[in-house]
Length: 143
Image 1 (cartoon, helix red, strand yellow):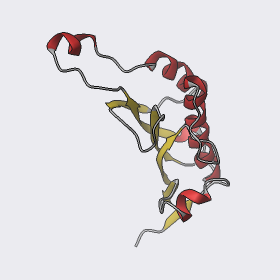
Image 2 (cartoon, helix red, strand yellow):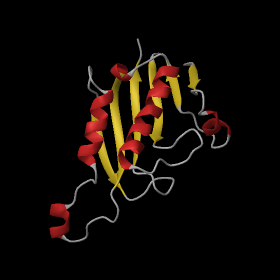
Image 3 (tube, one colour):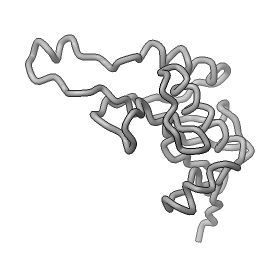
Image 4 (cartoon, helix red, strand yellow):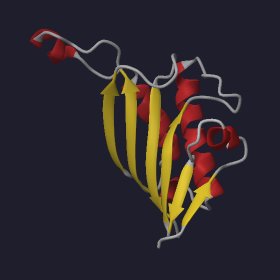
């Protein structure tokens, strides 16, 4: 049986204790990071858009650091972006885009500077808590 190591950075214990999920799980040298959002240690949504994106990446960084890794170890990233109401007409579909995507890319590029992961960005209508704009899920190979 493969050994699983639960990764819970300091300040994220409530996620495991109250909501019953792991911020990260390490299996061998692979680290699976649960979707991280722009909430602070008190689980309050960061309201300003850029600050929320930064907080989401800082939460990913906390899990990476707790497992002994860094953004250079991340090989896959999936992001979920709240887009609001989906387009219904062909004309709306032609002009539809993920809001604040360029700002998100600028923030992302502050964290991924040496090694770039694969990246899949998905538009969705909502996340678990009102006010959240993005969720970042990563997989890393450590060492």
